[in-house]
Amino acid sequence: MILIPLLLLLILLIAWGKITPFLAFLITSITTALVLGISPEKIPATLEKGIGSTMGSMAALICLGAMFGKIVAESGAAQKIALVLMRIFGKKYMQWAMVITGFIVGIPLFYNVGFVLLVPLVFALVYQYKLPAVYIGLPLLASLSVTHGFLPPHPAPTALIPLFGADIRRTLWYGILIAIPAVILAGPLFARTLRHIDAQPLATFRVSPMPESKLPGTANSFITALLPILLLVTSTVALAITSISTEVKQVISMVSDPVFVLLFALFVGMYTLGNKNGKSMTTLMNWCNEAIKDIAGLLFIIAGAGALKQVLVDSGVSTQIGASLQSLPIHPLALAWGIATLIRVCVGSATVAGMTAAGIVAPLAQSGQVDPNLLVLAVGAGSLMLSHVNDSGFWLYKTYFNLSLKDTFLSWTIMETIVGLVGLVGVLLLDWVLV
Image (cartoon, rainbow, N blue to C red; front, side, top):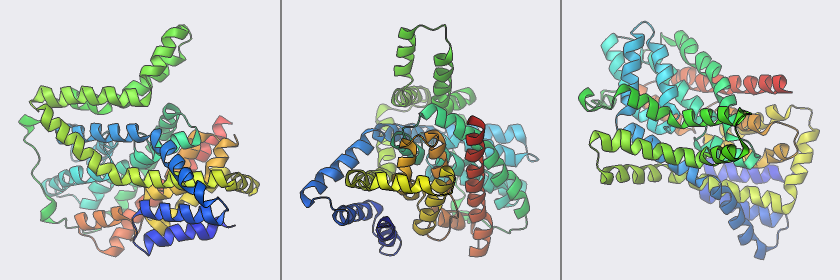
């Protein structure tokens, strides 16, 4: 298949050539268009269409999600949630406090932000209670990883939902169902086998948290951080009530659109976590501007993947790929997971792996052969598999926890792999139940 050497070109440009993913996608897209016979004068329009259609459906979601997460982080709400849960669970059940903290904070925060924000708090607990760092830290990171790969409004699942024609509410429900066992197995249960790892976190990463007197209130922090999920869940329940009139349901559908939900949550957060706690509008807008800078790279990766996807569609190869994939003696969800895993191992970036795999397996969703919501989660699970030395998350964890390469593989890589495997099993089980 001609797609294999072209996919190899993309992988080599990123992994070997060290070219930024956006440029690598554009180079690969142009090369693919020429090889597949698209007229040179039509290539710019194809690229523009792919970038525009992909970004138009998700740019607002991702940007609003980033701004909301930044306000939750900078206001101290995330720190407040962590402190409250630590006090509730105590030393004996500290792992479970980390799991819940990572899950709640991980919903509005992007992975790297959540890592940098919460890991220093983990280290403070390690020194206070004399607990092994990996034993306490890995459950938190498992939760952050699962929310990053499975749950909107994170970039990868948010990008895949319109591409596959999935429903954001249903994907969220299914994602939470799969995330719970994935977090438990990859976090607390697996971490109990790692108590022997002697991690000595660097003192550099032990930061002083905000004074508790300056933190938002407990109810304010929890409700605001979870507001997008609460709104989506409430609207799902409301739309299912048969006694509600069609006109009211139409209004609910409009205001429960993910963009409206995140915009409303952002304004609520700006007031409850910002203005109400003495933060000026200038400060809040600076946080929002910083959030956009934080996710600029992700937006360009998604845009580049959209260009490659459109080339495959306009050339007609997408239809051929769909027919070829459907004829393979492999469950389509397992196939999508496997393709995402292969690209993840080669490239390192979960977002690149997810978006590249999505362009290849999108015809499966269009054929009606598989539930598009489960396809989103299958690709997301595969994109988390086998993190190793070409993944920035691998080195972030190794550096902060001051571990050897061997111990990083034994803890981080296996944790990510457990998440990916449980995700695959979860989507296959849901597919079997829903059929």
